Amino acid sequence: MTAAKLSLQQLPLVDVSPLVNADKHAVAPEQKAQILADMRTACLETGFFTVPTQGVLSSQLIEAAYTRADEFLALPEAVKLQYHCKRTPNARGWTPMFEEPSVQGSSLGPNIWPTEVPRFREDVYALYEETTKLSHVLFQSFAEMFDLPPETFLVRISCVFNMTRHCDSHCTKRGYCCAKQQHVSEEAEAFMRLLTYPETHVAVKNSTVGIASHTDFECFTIIHQNGEGLHLLNRQGNWIEAPVCDDRYGMEHRVCNSEKKRQSIVRFNGADGDTVVAPLPTFVSAENPLRYASMTQREHITHQIDLAEQLLQQTKAAQAS
Image (tube, rainbow, N blue to C red; front, side):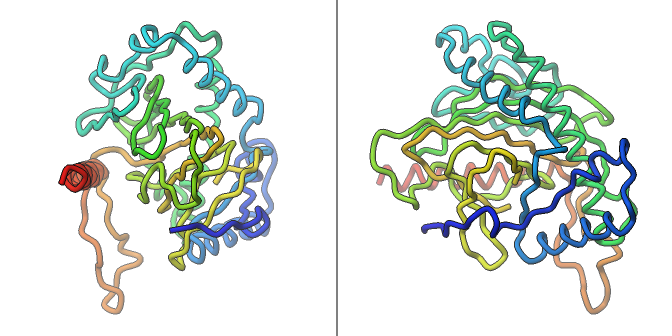
């Protein structure tokens, strides 16, 4: 299935920089109302939106994170193996080719930083802190755009960092270093990954999928990319190829292979593991009854991992037959 190419101007844009910097400059009520209205329209009509990084995230830190990822990948294999994710109980660390950690227990644990790469910890953690601030603003804004109290979705959030490399047409990854720093909560499903999709050496079609269609397991995802390949599924059921723009952060999505190398920074934002995810009473009535069963964030992730494992086994069986 191919994806339609749209210009950057054709994608919904929501400039949240005034909200991110509200602690420095007051936001006029009418300006905030317009931002929330734009966000609500984009979520309901399209399913995603772009956010300009100017005034939100440092372009220098974004570029530095990509550089640190390249520097880690350039290390000898024996050195990278010291940071293998299987060396930790919480899937922190490097994920080699054709491997992918699947953790259903506690993800608590210390960060693992490659000391062989100067400034890796400093630059990547600084970017993570900036994305944490952005995620808090979005959690609050998603509540306010539906006239809910600002703190409705501001649940306990922690930090995890993981670097991964995807290879060719397989849903496999080659990663680097994964880390976690506790903040407000004990165990929130919030983390960041640095992804590298290596160039392919054969002709690639628009429909050649490197990572199959999927929705992430958390509440929402923030993505920055420096190369083509990210496809987004809109509310109309059409695949859209996200254009590349250095100053934009961007559901069901997939990644297609490219003849050129592609990198992305992905921030996943989830609730605490034991937080119950259920329709809010405000939106339930006799005319609009419950449609979804309640479950915790951890139960949802476990369920999705089980489904993914079943699909993987079915795929392997089909290939072997």
